[in-house]
Length: 338
Ligand SMILES: NC(=O)C1=CN([C@@H]2O[C@H](COP(=O)(O)OP(=O)(O)OC[C@H]3O[C@@H](n4cnc5c(N)ncnc54)[C@H](O)[C@@H]3O)[C@@H](O)[C@H]2O)C=CC1
Ligand SMILES: O=C1[C@@H](O)[C@H](O)[C@@H](O)[C@H](O)[C@H]1O
Image (cartoon, rainbow, N blue to C red; front, side, top):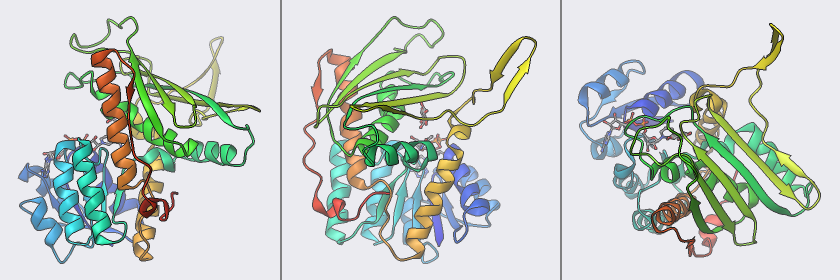
């Protein structure tokens, strides 16, 4: 598969490396970025052509599929161009920054007549989350009742805003829990506890987020992006007959100087490195086999944007905000999920 990459920033370059060095059956043939120097630099290693903009890259005969890793507000335009050209497109989260733009993509894809879009929610490809899903789906903990989660980053940059706690950070739990529980999130509420002093002055951190699903499962999520000690993702689903917990990443235990310790990873790149690899391996395998993508769909991208937006609205208003997401169209259900 010849892949064209739009956006050669942090994650764009990381995915170019992955598609070039790790994934069998794919190569990067085209790159573009609004920063031309950056595009040229990123294109050098895979020996890809540099394009002036996303439209010319999508139209290129040397591009079988498109990867969108530009800034969130630009995603919709590039994804819509790819769908109009009938080319498969993998879009990093978010699919689009407004529900309206997400629905435009959903409508364009339905008009095309088959799935083309996959959204970069990589946690569905993490072995720990996949094992949790197997346990839940097999009924081993009985009917799920509650989920307790924490999403902690060691620190956040100055450009990170309070809204990003929902839009950039909690959005991963929002997606993975809809998939894990096979249930829709119907409301969001944000409660703000005492603030840490270890943050930029403009930021509300930490935040408690409470979600309710259509079947009545309650989810509590602590988002704390300046926790200092490392990158820490926790998830525990409690059912009628037991519970299942996300494992911590494997790490050696060290016993010395009267203490036993295991290291905690510093950020999400290492924590989800294998998940990113699996995500792209399966995406490329689907494309190479001529199958529609089986990873997170445009509908999942739409739902995640609505739900994370509801959390932003709740923090501003102090109210519980309902999501009013319609029933998932059969078009998406028929394609299945990983
Ligand atoms: N799945 C995950 O865990 C993660 C996903 N992301 C997502 O990936 C996307 C990119 O994030 P980063 O790489 O961290 O940002 P970044 O700022 O490092 O890179 C974005 C790049 O896109 C370029 N760009 C912006 N608009 C463009 C356009 N219209 N056409 C071509 N290039 C354009 C910028 O010049 C920049 O080089 C974001 O949507 C972010 O939410 C980022 C980090 C982790
Ligand atoms: O996607 C990500 C970032 O954009 C976000 O800012 C971080 O909080 C998340 O942990 C990371 O997975």
